[in-house]
Length: 189
Image (tube, rainbow, N blue to C red):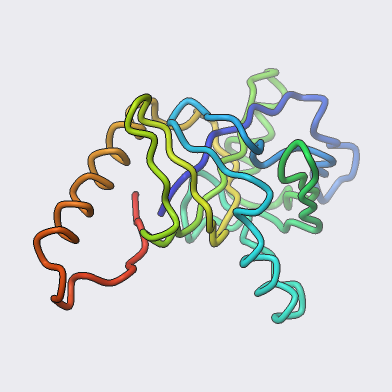
């Protein structure tokens, strides 16, 4: 699973006035066209296939999770809109979830920033690596979830991704006609 840059949120991005939900309005899950701290670059076009698939599934949204945990679904994304800046999202967190009660609400009350971390699968053949600076463009990003996290993305992921891409290049070059020469997805955890 490829995790995009963590986008910092502030207390003002959360509306806690409702007794059952915490609203999240008009925040960016990721920004387009510039390298983040891990070296990933996504563009509006990176999500084209995802949005086409989403329309065909009656608008099924990516999940909203706490700390990338599959079993910690904490709310719902209600809107995903790509614009010239990035992928703008709206949603809400259920206040009665374990993560909201034990982490999110206390962190918001203490004015500790939270982050959005966008995750998805990227086919190998859609990655364009810039060998000079180690950045890479994910031309096809299959969005899976947008997590709320209390720490930003790992600064070392850039090197992990670069090494994984190099290893894949080596495998392609040494096994040109084997079963391993397919367009598997880059999967980072």
